[in-house]
Image (tube, rainbow, N blue to C red):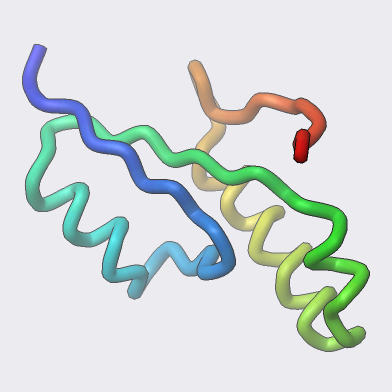
Length: 77
């Protein structure tokens, strides 16, 4: 089955040049990515950052289609 790595996306949602993702894929045979959207991040962000953040989530979703690709939920304190 091989090793399994976890990448927890916090604020940096880049796919192509993300150091944590690159390290996890180099060290592990399989990688699970996790991200929780905290509405407070969007509230505190300006319009350009908010647009970039939401566009990055769309790109992440498109890149992760398939089994286990996307789950919904609500962040808890």
